[in-house]
Length: 321
Image 1 (cartoon, rainbow, N blue to C red):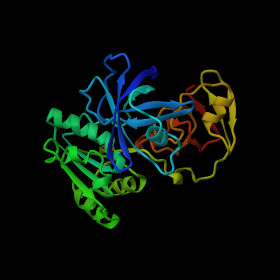
Image 2: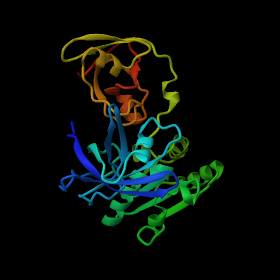
Image 3: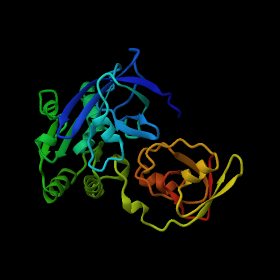
């Protein structure tokens, strides 16, 4: 789905924790914004070739602004440094979206939200929605310290205190034991949602797998796992189903690289296999999935793939392009 570019204005910037700032964006003409659901994100156009995805952390009932929170990363690829160092109140910025790859399950009777660090942002939007609609939920929020806890005052205040537990400076072994106890049994109808840094996500996924089926565990990654791309990058051929054109994908290029070089336009954003923008149907052949976006069931179906990172297990892949 193509989303038009919205020109927005930075209405407010606030320091929410050490190295974390929130940015409230409004339509520059004052019009209501496209609606969104809890867990959604927007794409910020920060400069030529610099597009980054950030989760919305305000509630879906708020139609006049989008709020995001950005952590300054020591090894920034350009996004967090641009947000922290260059963006000022009153600046104009291009935005596309919102899109939601991390929605609340409509059939869930209870929601357990697990946040690590800046991963709290989409879960905060979920918590706001669930609180406003009176649906059962619990948020467990793990951070390095109180000073690293974004929105700590809000989450420990009267609106959320009875539904939120803040965990500061928990050692890995202690966190593993806590999650083991928390996820040891599954009340009927409970779904689990997690977002955070890679070690946290791996721990949640491994622990939840002992008691929860994969279709009730919902994960949003904001970092690619290098191990997903550690296998050999053999060359293969792609065929475009609609035109019959064939192209070879060499070891050093992605499918997106090859398509772009041949003048075939594919929408792409993160180029890490996280955001799902370049998801494309597979008509024939077996993909070699190297993304952090598809579920295990979706990977097993082998009927779609992310072109920015995934490759092929068969010599030929026929794509729905």
